[in-house]
Image 1 (tube, one colour):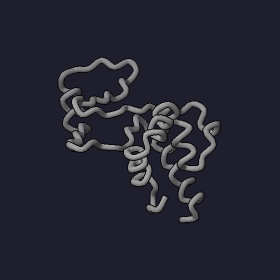
Image 2 (cartoon, rainbow, N blue to C red):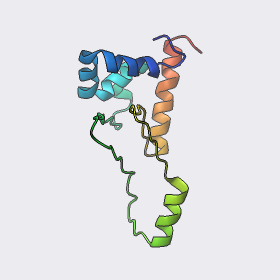
Image 3 (cartoon, rainbow, N blue to C red):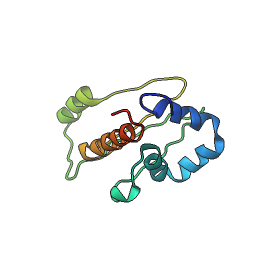
Image 4 (cartoon, rainbow, N blue to C red):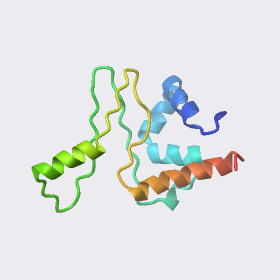
Length: 121
């Protein structure tokens, strides 16, 4: 990987290497751990899911529903105004949707591991 952070090369490889793409779709956790130089057994309770975009499909990812959630109209409207982000691209949008701080730190730790693996830091 040649970039300061490897995701651009990773996404390009996913577009151009169909065998690798099939591997990542079948084994997303293992593929991400290999990419970042992380032992998958160090994050046993973390799951990765691939949502493959299609030319004729709008993909909707729902946020995690909080426990004991009883919405009222005012709260729902405020949260929608404060937290909604629409990412509209016509060529696809690769990336990560991270539902909570714990998983955000898992991904940040994986990225830090990649930097060390590549000798960047």
